[in-house]
Image (cartoon, rainbow, N blue to C red; front, top):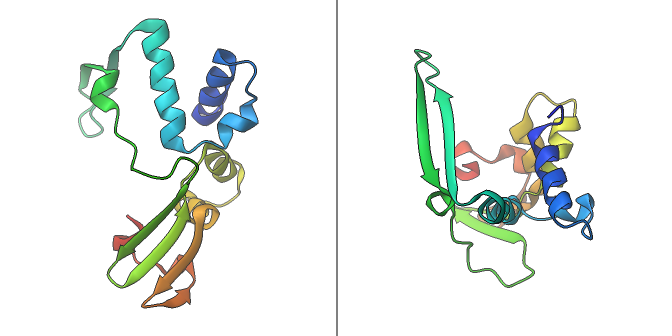
Length: 145
């Protein structure tokens, strides 16, 4: 429990499949990693999930109950080994690796105070505006979101 959530997730997955090292789990996209975590939940404990959260404004606590099927999402139709995403918006084109746990761990370990910027630098392969290559750091918020 003293590890960051990303490391806890990787350790849990490695424990469920001892033949697959943590480093291999860390290279999976976050979506594939979380999909496997939901599968582990289903197999070991069933699909029911319960949570307690507090309102950030008033502090009132509330309880949630839902199933793993309620939070699963379908993967985009990418070729089997493709882990690259191409997005076009407002004249911008961004080619990015899908974020992995390894990327998140780099952000956690970095001295940067801007985790979003660190993650972008780690994942974006190329950014263009109207065909010209640009620095990914100059991408406007509406494109990054």
